[in-house]
Image 1 (tube, rainbow, N blue to C red):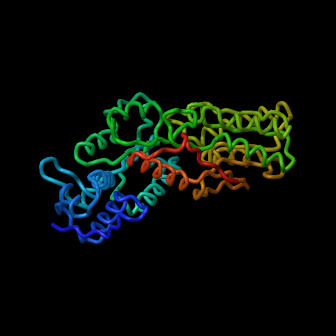
Image 2 (spheres, helix red, strand yellow; image 1 turned 90 degrees about the vertical axis):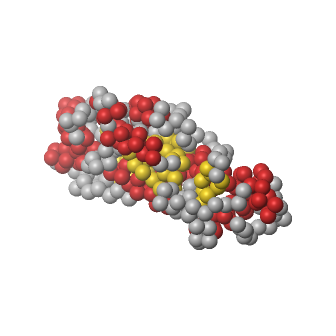
Length: 369
């Protein structure tokens, strides 16, 4: 078989990059058909007049991107497009849960970003529900885990994207060992590749409210340290000191159990908080809320109490760009972008799969007011 490549090894671009691109284009346009056998390395060396190393590097990249497969003692073949290499995406919550708005939006963004990588023949498959481990469930009994085990036996995986907690991650790593993986989580976790910049959220939120002339601030926080390791409160208090306002009151909600939804938890906690403010007759002028779903409960409690917003209190919340929820009161949004997160995860995974240099980690996704 003669493979025609538009190749000029005299230009500055490396030969292996040109070979990879030319073969990929011929597969994409159908010139090289599924299951077609490619020339051997020696044949390509003679045909193209390049080094064996250039051929091997080009072929390795095409294998990782799911375009070809190499079968020992048989040769190298164009891959069946019906069996592309998979990217497994692992989520802590069940994606069908009402409160999993952020995760569903991130999944949509991941699919968009993966499909935009024309140089890769990747498809994504999701596995969710691993949060049940914290309630004592055996991982082997979780449907997401069972699906993952089955698919690992039947499909080639190019990589994994983990959006799970540490406990889930530790148990899943034994299953996906050896497959390139990127992780989203706490910015202080050394195993995490991408994280939301919680410290910047706290800092920018306080600075914004202080510019409005507000001095007394409270932070309604529904995230425990296992989620953000206190970086949000660190940003809040450091900003308060810098703009010379009193220390911000941190109002931490208790942990929710399986029977209590986040909105109900936030409502009950906010009612208790307002009773405390009434007793001491010292209400804050500004309230920062750490979660857009919890904001439902906070808004309901404020409305029931008859608190005028923004007259008596200005409310600012952590939000996700593109997820627009209605609360019945005016709320300032300090947004993280699920698309920025997805783009960063896909970029980091591609670098890891191709064994290229990684940026300093964790890469922090910024927020924007």
